[in-house]
Length: 257
Image 1 (cartoon, helix red, strand yellow):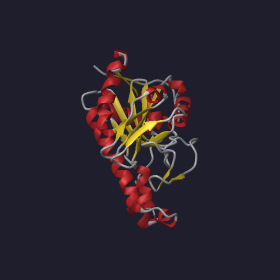
Image 2 (tube, helix red, strand yellow; image 1 turned 90 degrees about the horizontal axis):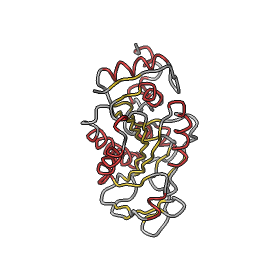
Image 3 (spheres, helix red, strand yellow; image 1 turned 135 degrees about the horizontal axis):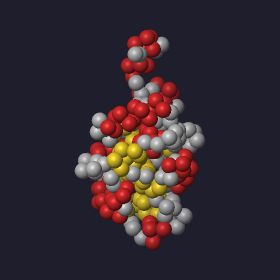
């Protein structure tokens, strides 16, 4: 029996948002946010075309995030206290930076957040080149084959620290995964892989890895849902680009209820 708990901690959210999330959780909703939300802006918002973004590259990244989301949603089907929030941005994270590897802007958002009791797993999907082997240098930088590449200096460590600080009042325990969503890739699990504060995995092995994590979690974390913790995360989910709203301009505000 899963217990739904709520306390008086309002972190990165307000009472209205807490009430809304609590109602949806009680209605058995376990998914919030929108997969690849920031990339939908780069695909459809004209200002990104002016910045030189090719929509095709953004679409490839979007499909990579969709693949990860589909796997996570399938994995959590038989785990009734697991909650997934997609595309979340902490306001303190920073500005957009162009990623030479993927050809799109990294906005500092976290692609996927799994919440299990008070355990929080942040997952970044990387649409890196397929048919390659990836490994990690001693300093934590990811390399492809034997070479460094744009995007290999992952920001996961910084993101983990920011999430840990933001969610400190909840006593949340943060873990980080960098998931390569491309096809036919492999990861070397050597000494450098094990010593990092994040785990580098492929989409093909992500489910197996999560199963190992699940088995090692204490049973006490598998029978409760922390409404306040979930709301602190879900309240910062990014809204996908609304093409209809953009076309209507200010008129769209008249249609909102």
